Image 1 (tube, rainbow, N blue to C red):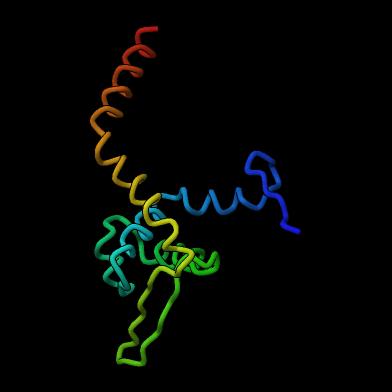
Image 2 (cartoon, rainbow, N blue to C red):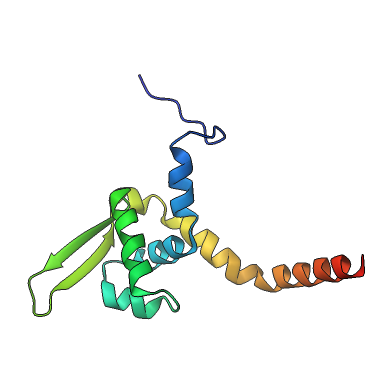
Length: 123
């Protein structure tokens, strides 16, 4: 029998998954991996502003959740490559939509924020 999950329940484990995939770094990593395998240092260069520590932590969480797989190649120095798993691929359209929605709508968001701030400052 399938276990029912309800994202609106406080103790539902789906909340942890939502927290993970709603994280800005996870969204950017998953979207970057959409095109295929990427090495760790390439990800770090591509995602401006992410520290090595945060990238490593986020990749480990995504790997634990079954969304990303890690391959180590015995080169000198060691090469580490990340790729989406089949489960991770089920998120690609959703993640891309979120990431690129922000790009397309940033001007409208900034305008709304400025209008809100003006109203809040006037009141």
